[in-house]
Image (cartoon, rainbow over all chains, first blue to last red; front, side):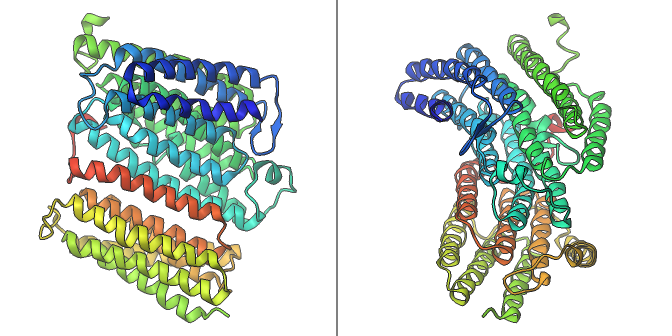
Length: 337
Length: 212
């Protein structure tokens, strides 16, 4: 119990250094390192059941979030400099929001309650929306706006699903619902289907994935990496927990397949280096979702782990390329190749 | 004892306010209509609170009327930058309303005959018919977000969606504390962010860098 509370509290406590940028950076670095250590220690304590729920699937998602958190903080130390943050988000606010963002992702992953998982997913939107505007421009403002509106609309649909689950089970505790007798009711089927559209918005499932290329391409690279490698898998984890209540396998295979097909076609037309990676993220997420839905859980987890580190590295590299050559178009970055 | 007809009357009035918003291009009346719509939702909550003798509903009603009818209305007017006479730079509001009405009747038909009539959802008033109002309101909000380009219209679309959640929740299940917190959190986050963003960007146009 202590480790889980520490896991949630540490990124928030790191924000006490708000009055001094150097201290805040140091505390963020310490916080991200501790998060990775605690996540690793939790591996030896699973399964955890109570207020928190951590099993042999949850732990991999925790490791993904804490690893990418550490990498993004290290990368940000040099990448986010005072002159870059000239809009709404100052350098200090950047680190504060980053720490809150990670805390909300961890909360969504370990909490043993569907309603609070929804709150956590919504909190990730609140904490991360302003981070998109760090490198302030008209385009980044528009991208942030699209992110807020599309994702919030999607997550509202997910709340319909949560209400229907409560209506049917009279509880929202994950372990209680998953250990109870499966209910073959239309209400539960509707709840699971709505969750696919609702939480699927954040995972990158067709047709509500349009926010994803905008947000990924206009965020600073460490945030793009956190979006692609951590946020989407966390939303997928929540979706998977809802899916476990009543597996609608056909639907959970059909929509991701459609997502992969459409993203693959659109990917060919991309000229913006980070938008191309964003469409690749959509493909990988939907492939992992198909894996989870068809019972290939560890295959999906391996894909998510590989994708997390690979795509984070791709976003970090593209950040360096864009900053060095001051050019986002792939064709014009030939000097970098 | 809950009077189902009164619930239907209030719910229908909420839908009328949503249709009014859809057919309006001027910002000022749209913002006021949003405030009235939220107030109607809180009236529903107050009525259920007194009829069922449950304080949870009353708290929910107070939260909604304070947050949405007053605080959000204030922020939206502040986002207008003291120019309440301005209208959205859009054409075809009337034709959008016609499309919306067609969409509205189709959605009602599909929802009532193919979904709600079959799943056996019962409400405090004892009928599944009432829950259809929440879905209609949700689609109205979604339609507003999709068809409009201004920040304010899109925020109002989002608030309509949030109102539809409350309408669904208070008619379907006893309100747990969790849902009140969720709605509060949602609106709070939205107010903080949108109050910053509306000051920066009032209209949304197609940008080449964000296409494809």
